[in-house]
Length: 387
Image 1 (spheres, rainbow, N blue to C red):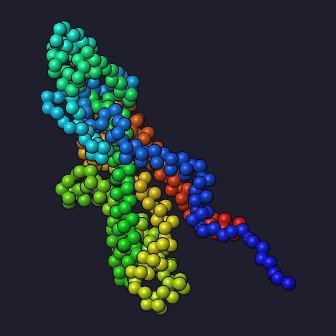
Image 2 (cartoon, one colour; image 1 turned 90 degrees about the vertical axis):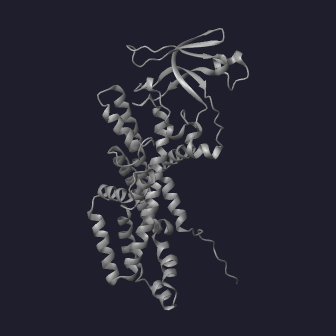
């Protein structure tokens, strides 16, 4: 009599249960969705920003500190020299210089071949002379002069107002996502790489090497992060964007190193590690292929937390003037500019808007980190696998 085997439930890899648990965690998925949205804005920002000039730095001196929703009539005058349009990749990365100059005006009149426009004065006690341009000058890049007024005169709206330099706040806020996500990504990559190297060396070799690495971790841990960033910036004699990225990354590797060291101390005593040692495998292969893959979960969780910490640190440094320098649009620097105008109506908006975005982005990373921590919990994964 032949025996038949009943088909049991198909076994699934642990990664399946990790994804399922993360998917069911609604706060974590909301955080991931917001992070994804900011990433899209950071990458494609220059393609749809109201101000697509480099660093969204096109300023209108006459339109300083305007409230959200402010609109004005603008006269667009072609430049005397022609700037070729940038290709899509150059615009995506660096923005695009404009082929014209814009003048805020209160009205215009066409008399014969001359267009006279009344400027929008910021200080009405010092009236300016009317702007006068010939139709030929205004039609430098227009074939049909009959469409000239519609082409060069239009209404410009600042949905979130302007800052103290007359720049569009919406454009700078959206472009600021590139700074925040960029510094978080670079800082996490640097901290993870340095932390893995130091933690792996300390945990695997032990002895005096472990004591030396622990001493290094303790020294770095005891120094305030902001002091380390200032020291690194002074050592590199620069306060540019990339120096800030690197400096923040070099102050956040201790957490990674401590976790990696502890995991190595535990895992290297396992039976399968003793087996590969007996087989005579090189140490780098043991570390790369048998130890590090077991730390994917903890490293992802730490990287997510470090991402949020790097965003906060960059905002704090920029607020103090030690991080990203003008004209780059940093949220921390925008808060600082608004703080200097805190007694005015515009100052309230300039402080609140970037502060809200910083809080939402940091909260999103924290929610995602909590979800990843629960999803990678080995006890829960084992329970799901058995169930």
